Image (cartoon, rainbow, N blue to C red; front, side, top):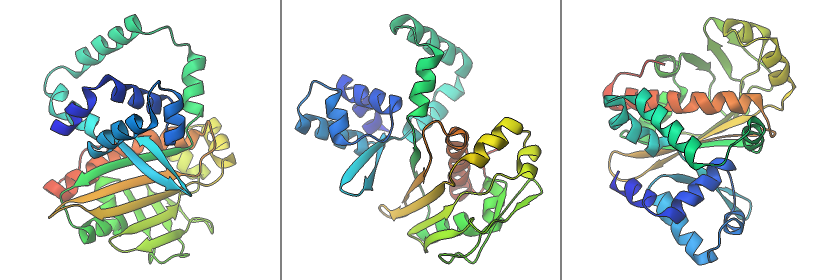
Length: 272
């Protein structure tokens, strides 16, 4: 956590994080365009942020895209703010933001959200790659930390059946894309059926919008980092700007992954 505080102490690095918060998934060239700073300096700042876990990078062809990673900030909030008065701290932070920044209209907020086309999240878990793979694929595990069971033989091209809250979802396009045990898992996201939307009281508008969107996919990249520690990067992409599904999963994945981490490290999931 010392690396996180050190990284956040520099105003230039905070500006880079602000830039990614406004528009995630930028290349080095795009980040440099928004700063009066040499390319080499920006690269060094990005390296510090990545080492602290505050950003995650994903290769797209010859480009390296940078994504804001909220996991370390969430850990700080859980360790300190949660113990004291989270609501008061949030209210004071909101007031400070309102006083220091120019007014932001709802149009500005919507425009920022509409630029996003992917969700990227990195967390570190005290476990083994084999155990983490089991937690991602074994229904007995997924049910505990997620409330979802995924039925598949986990071979590329195989179907995957999704079951949640008594709703069972199968679809020819709901399949496993990649499966390298202990290393990498990718599958297409579930189909938004009427039964699913009704079970979670999402409404007709969400059903219509989600059903009209292209099917997204989620990828889990597993990497051992030192003895007894695994780095898990989740990339959920394939969205169009303004995606209602992206908005939903961006709020859901951090809680699910925190519950997964808790289950593997303590034996008990978090209450979602």
